[in-house]
Amino acid sequence: MKPLKEKISITLDSPVLSRVKELAEREDRPVSSYINLVLKAHLEQLDREEKGS
Image (cartoon, rainbow, N blue to C red; front, top):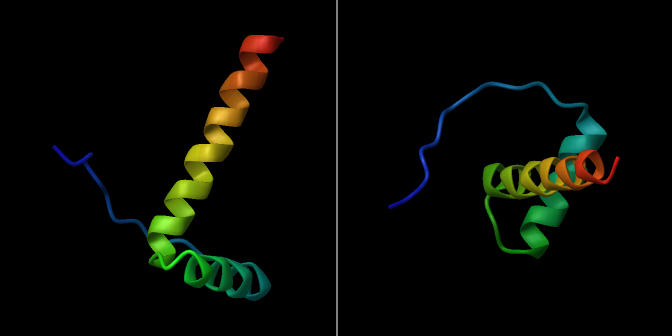
């Protein structure tokens, strides 16, 4: 079963969005999927840091 997803609207700085689009294209992913992947990795890193404290 696929994870539940929710649509949101966000505002990004133009240089940030340009870079995200570039990186998503390199991995042949939609921008939203790439952003989701990056956020998951960031949250996992925060969790690891909190557990190590």
